[in-house]
Length: 266
Image (cartoon, rainbow, N blue to C red; front, side, top):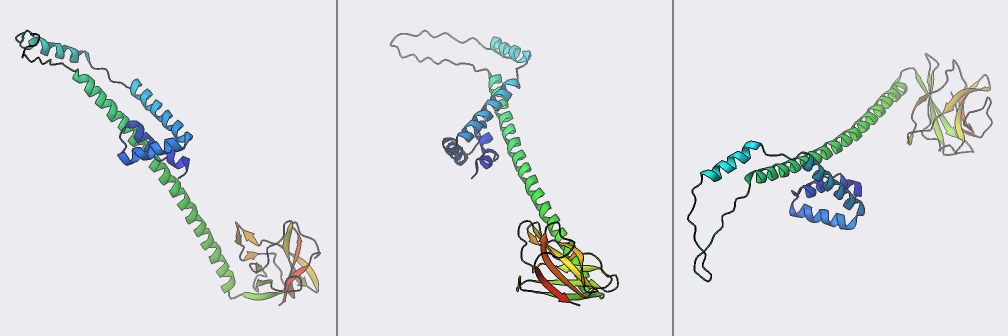
């Protein structure tokens, strides 16, 4: 268990308030013996509780003192029994403990317990908020992937989509990519998920062969947030004879300079 998890568990506050169970008490004492950070945190908590209790101590009202002395004055004066040394007389002294101090002490204990409970509740609420934030991020990520997948399916399933398979060449025989050319609009989409990862400082570039000459089709992204990048839109071509992909510097080139990885004719 991490030290921060121990500090945020709320058990230190329960221990300091004196309301921890026997098991929790043993656990806290083990932590204190093992981790100086936990011992320091417990000390700070105890100082804080003591300071709070002192600052919020409840003084009894003046009427309490009057009531106590009124009861003493109205009590019957008992018979005095002399004490004989070595005698058989038994002497019992009946002391009076100011009950208002007991009430005040009980109030302080209740206050400390309330503080500890609030701390535990706050920690649980804080952890719940953190878990909720993680859950929301997960849901947002799933929704984003669903939207991207729906967009990909629209491209693939469109009645105007003409798929063009790009096969690996000598530079990468196992590489592959697929072009989806929209015959009604001339839009071009590429699925580069079967291209190898580009080396550092390099990026794939798409070329359309138009009238026998390569025309820049744009730079290709092969990864997004650690995942393989799926279908992405490239530059639009009204006509093309073939498509090819080369490996170029990240900013690309006006004409193909790097090795050609895949190519496919329409």
